[in-house]
Length: 355
Image: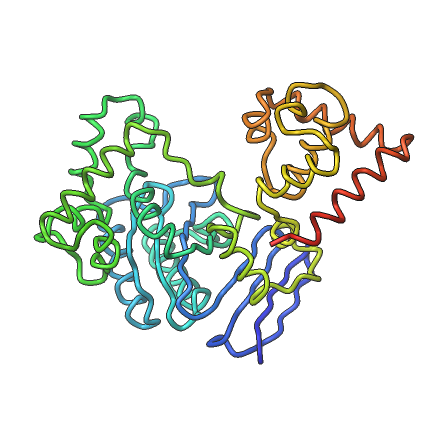
């Protein structure tokens, strides 16, 4: 089997070429690319220095025209999109495992157009595009709604009333939402049926249910980022396990996001193992200061991929307490062999059941 690996660390780079129809990886210092047939991605790209990538609607029309052409050339399926002033979001599927080829051609074409038109040189985008591998069964429809909500997340809109947000979304022109709400507004290059099937179909009723669900999202804290593992994968434990086993090269220690994925274990499993090794239940550990609580916080951070604020929310503590607690644990381990042994034993147990 032939695979593709791109790694860039500092000014060094390595390129190995393999069959892209089977699998493709490309790594950069802070990016992990996982590619295989019919993979689903949430793709974003932001303007360099957060500057606008569109100056007017003519630019947006050319962007859409280029997108439509590129989707056709590379046989990529687009489920949802939104164009914001300084960035864009795509939810797309790659039957031919060719995300990099598609994005390279698409971004080069639009950047060349923009630079010629505005007599500028250099990068239009802030680094390479960002792609999150997504579990289709669990997150396709959720991400579709997440993308469509982006227009009301801007500062001038996010503090308005729900009714004003709904009105703004319905009137927003540069998004696939208009085709999800009204058949008269469908665009030929967007696949609506797959997402709308979850809401009863692509008839009037299905579109009404989709909109009602989106309305519900407006009144709740719709958060996706906390669920992303290693800045690269969105899915349940079994999906992450499958990706790790089939598509990731585990000895690439220098890739930060890959290191996060390889050290990932579910939150509940981490809690279960820590409680078992310590001999105390979760409520006891949470309510008592000291090494037991600090150990759980450290394991959740290192092995479940939780951030400090997430650990604090779970433990009923503020972020600073979590950070200080983890630091103190590491300091104690330097002079406490029993504590060091306990932590090592927990990590050994976690390494056996890691997904």
